[in-house]
Image 1 (cartoon, rainbow, N blue to C red):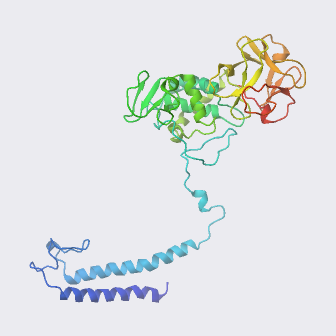
Image 2: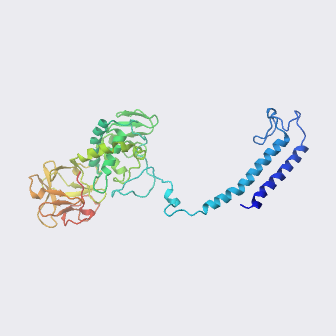
Image 3: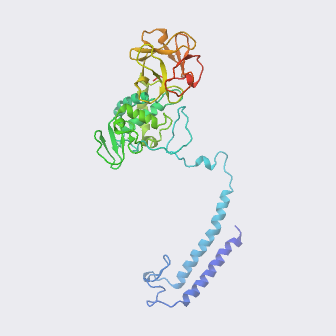
Length: 392
């Protein structure tokens, strides 16, 4: 900075000092002999108190000093800001990369990717440490994870090569409720209890996934405190497994404490839904009878027809097994009484395809449709979302 810019505030300060002395010398003294009485008007801390013993000259010097500093700052700071702004930023370090994110935690999509921040979602729960406000022991977590994983897979969350939504959903359930379907958390008081009844007024979180009663009024207490119905509701709230940000234990990170227990519980599963590669579509049946057609349905609809059990290479629903009707290239798929025939043998390939042993054809949804009740059949084993099915 040049001398002319520095000297300007100094001369201005000197002029202020002279003017101040003239004004002060022309003002009549107070009865007490001080500049201003204690009860008179003051300017910030320039009201002289007798104990300070401050003189007029000292006060003038003080005011002038402040003026000089302020004037200097008014010149130096803008110059500094301009200089800083002119410094080139290293490549890859733009301000946009360090901007504050609008979401409290990462949300995983059906493909395992992290989607861009979207509209703010209603909270499913508000307690950052769950209903019990504590971390469960390893034994408690393992027991809770078994219950949570079972209901989570029945609701439609998947666990496959590209997504661990089922594990995440199960861990959140453990963190939120400890796997107890009738627990509630009273938001105004921070107290927990068991339904029935609910002994608090106002907002409270309910059941396995602690679904808030006021944010989600369409889910009543009868549903929220029923394990299967709560899981179906939570699956819908998560946008079919695409977003977990509504849960406080997810955004706070507490669910991380239970990921290992959830992973072990998911690995031990032998039953649940069979979700398709088309998001929100699950394998179902039109009825529980010989030759009943296998069809698509909406995951999390609460229909028992979506539940399957894996036994060896068969996909069972009680005494019936999923089977192809023939060796045809586009043979229909239906239920047949389990007899271990090649018609009923399926192999889960690593890429999500489900191949039948009879003609080495793969299960498919012919139109990749979201329309419930669409009959499924078999076709060539090519990688396509309509041919992807994930076993529990």
